Length: 322
Image (cartoon, rainbow, N blue to C red; front, side, top):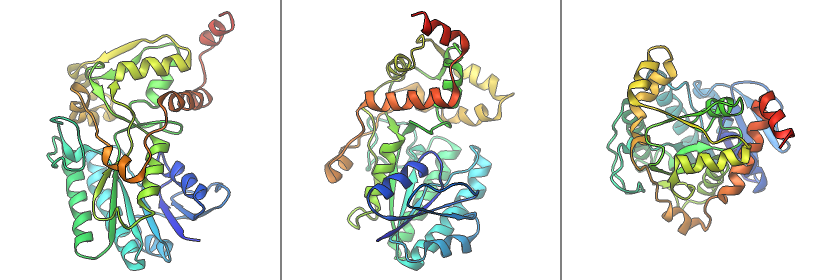
């Protein structure tokens, strides 16, 4: 059995592990904390900041997956993400494994039409510039023969287990308490969203062939639609009133003085001001699959959200009398 090693067990790492097990691989997950491992999964506890941990756990691997992330701040990204990448390049390179890296779209900057694999990197933010440098270093290592690299690029995530996103903890905690959903930018602008299990499935596909190496791939995204339209469908699954509260750039700036997380989001607000559409046609053509049907994805996400965040007593009462 091929050994596939996943570094990181978060929003994408966790479903990726399950996808790899379902494909019949021997799977090892490397994470910082102890915990129960799923059936058929080896758990290794260690910090990828330690190169020895990376090298030891990548031995004999066919594929190594980089799904690690850090606190959402420019400083944390600049201090930690390069170190993670350098260690995993070294680890995968030593054993000859494919290194599959999960990337976002920050390095591409403001879109001028649909984003695809040929869109030049023109970052419009500090985080985008960091992502550009990381991606360039990654593929430079591939061209130098140091390691075999492929990158899967995802848009804004949603799905079971996804809490740190626009469609995450802040949204569910509010709407399941009967409050309005807070949205950035123009809720009627078109946007491409990525369903976390589809991202996991895409990464697993990239890690299973040499043909994909040496290039980035846009992973499957949902059909383009406005944030408003997606929220309304999600609210219907949650059985809550579809109320939106638009957060203006000025309000975001003001809130940023008191909430560091929102301060970090300000420079990325451009993604929500105009159409932000991803073209995943190349991936679909090569790997012969696309995203999960939207209604199925939203149904699974809503069920997880209710289990995780609960429903306000007032909403439970209203539902019981409906």
